[in-house]
Image (cartoon, rainbow, N blue to C red; front, side, top):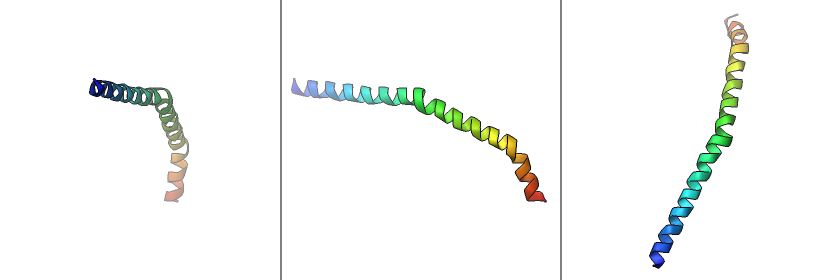
Length: 57
């Protein structure tokens, strides 16, 4: 019986950690990563041409 309770606690802890990781990815990291990627694309699109011309001249 003790072993069954121990396994149950292990499963609950593992499920909790997985749930926290999933929610963190969906609610925090995902939107932040997309925001950083969008800023990088805008920066490359806006200043990439000028930097390229400066290197050629």
